[in-house]
Amino acid sequence: MKMLHKAVGALIGLTMLAMPALAWQPTKPVEFVVTSSPGGGTDNFTRMIQSIIVKYKLIEQPIVVVNKGGGSGAEGYLVAKTSPGDAHKVLFGTNNAYLLPHVAKMGYKFADVTPVAALALDEFLLWVKSDSPYKTVKAYIDAVKAKPETFKMGGSQSKDADQTLTSMLSNVSGAKFIYVPFQGGGLVDTQLVGGHIDSHTNNPNESIGQWKAGAVRPLCVFSPARLPKGVNVSATQGWQDIPTCKDEGIAIDQFQMPRTVWLPAGAPADVVKFYADILKKVSETDEWKDYITRTVQTGRYLAGDDFKAFITKDEKNSKDVFDREGWTVK
Image (cartoon, rainbow, N blue to C red; front, side):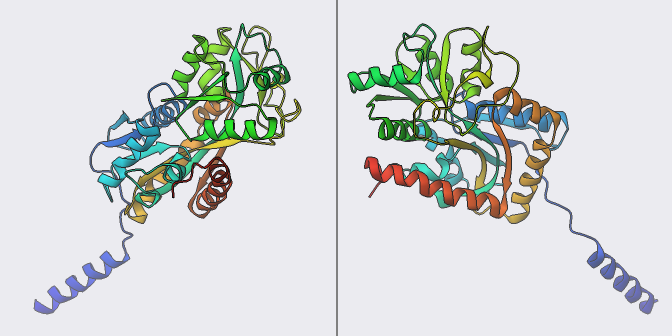
């Protein structure tokens, strides 16, 4: 009998060694932390992902979306610092995760977050109010140059993508703006419609509603080619009708911003893989592809080394602007 027990024990041990380890799964509600205010591009990005995950039951636990957009998004990234290794807090943002610490003394460092994935790249356009007297980029830039630092350019956050692009626009055109930051692209668009600013550089998703309503008008897109053809958004125009800024005489070939997902530093590799795999599945759904088409973003899934390589290149290009403007924190 004793020999039998030993044999059974050995068999159980071998069986357990042969069994694959169970993949990590959330064991309690997951918090999606949005590093912007409600209504902006990051908020829409997050809630779209949440809706797809819920629809296809990709995560069994409930998902709670929380907006923490203060401090140009730093409030959201502080969650990572105060919750190291927390596998149930997922942060949604942009390249501000790694760019903010370059331009301000933040309560967090880039080392406090773990890269998970990027799912899309935002295109940027120059917008004015629909009743603006400026019908072309040249007319608008000439007016700004004639009265430097009187025209207000609104943007989402301070020393972030919108202000970086505004700096690049000023550098290549000689037009000097007053930059006015707000918390989120939705609020920026509201300010333009209300006549409180003269222009902004929102991505399509943040201004499509106001363009459809005839309240704002795009002058050009910061892309090497016109945006894809589609149905008209306004009464007479669609995205494909917007000229590129380069063709209109603005020497900026392209400007894009990634939509990104992060975990707190110290997140185990299997946790990172779990969320990266979930996001890959999201990016392959018809709903996500429809969302990318509807918001006129460029769909591009990046994870692992590809994502890290993108971060390195984007960080260098942005830092060149920060150094020129004197924004870099010493």
